[in-house]
Amino acid sequence: MALDRIKSLFGGNKAENTNDSKIIKRGGEGKSGGGGRGNAGSRSGGGNRSGGGRGGSNRASGGSVGGARGARSSNSARSGKVPPVTPVSPSRARLERRANDEKIIKTIKLIFTTIIVLAAAGLALSLFLYIYKPAVATVGGSGVAQYEFTYQLMMAQNYSSGYSLPETLGQQAMDMAAEAKILETVAKERGIALTAEDRETINEQLDYIDQMSASGMSGVNARAAGDEYMRSTYGVSRSQFRKIMEAEILMTNLYSMEFDQLTVPEEDALLYYEMDIGSYEEATVRHILFFYEGPDIEAPREQEESERLALEMVERIAAGEDMAELVHEYSEDGDLSNDGIYIITRATGFEQGFLDWTFDGARNVGDVGICETSYGYHVMRLEDMQVMPFEEVMEDIIGDIKAEQVEYQTETWKNDPRFQVQINQRVFDSVVQQILGSY
Image (cartoon, rainbow, N blue to C red):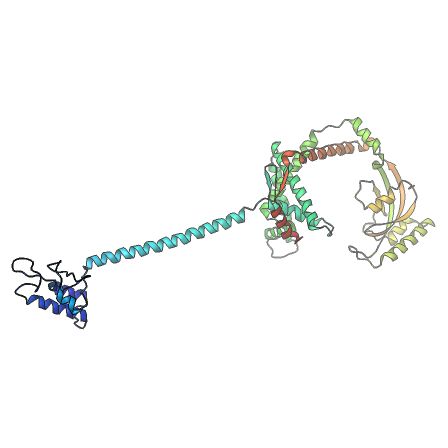
């Protein structure tokens, strides 16, 4: 029976295996020895159970695994035969395979779990770095976000002459961003908050940007067009642009609150008027414009030709020709409905060359001459000059005084030690380089 089990474990009845045939032969020898199960190593009075009875296996230095475990099997040692393998029961083999399989599965699970954890950690880190961007500067306890600085930087670039150095624009943008952060902080400290009307104003402004951006383009989503406009013009997303508008409204409301709380006595306004009487002169001038070709103007003539035409027109007016008729015949101004007449003060938004000619201290009513602006040459005649009465301008003067006081208060806040500006130079340089290029 034992032999049959051994055969079934090591190849059935196949006798071709050399080791199996040797095992069978040794088993036969064991049976022939005096009715015992081997010929060496007596176990008791008559029953012999030699190592050969179980195959005569020597583990190390000739010790047999048989009935007498301590005896040497000299025949096996001298023969040089390969020791047989001790059989393992099928149930134990299955248990060992199952244990090994479980170890492999656990190892695979551990590897996959590690990979998933590392991937999740990397994704979380990437998301964190994408969302969290270090501040360009700190103003007091508040940070100037990169998008806030980018907005101011692109605004400075858009309104620059084109010749400003990147570091100059960067400093201008930093000054504006810091001032905005200071005023926003003060507004919140004063308890100023956005109203429903303020939020509606923001929504209307965003809608206007969307519609304007998609104007003239069929099949274009207005919101997507607005998003692209804000990104390309201001360097910010829609949500960032909304935050910037919210902060600007808070600053406007702070300015209004400070303005409304101020009072200016009438005698102070009168003194202000008398000290700056020239600012309240009101002039009436008539002009004829001759364009000339320039960077922003397309015209059929060069500068010299335009100047020659203007000087000729001065001679014709001095000779007595009606200037109002000449305006309609020759002037290239876009609006001639007023016969070339403008009523202006020094505060009027005309080009400086136009204002300088009009308010020259030696100018008299009736004077005719020419001045040059970016549009071309103007033939000018002073029709009238009046000083506006104090009563007409008193409210404007009071507003000017209050505005100056609010501006002074703003400078006081900016110089407050608690609002000290600390620039992160590395981030500052990185954003400036990204927007304006290397410097």
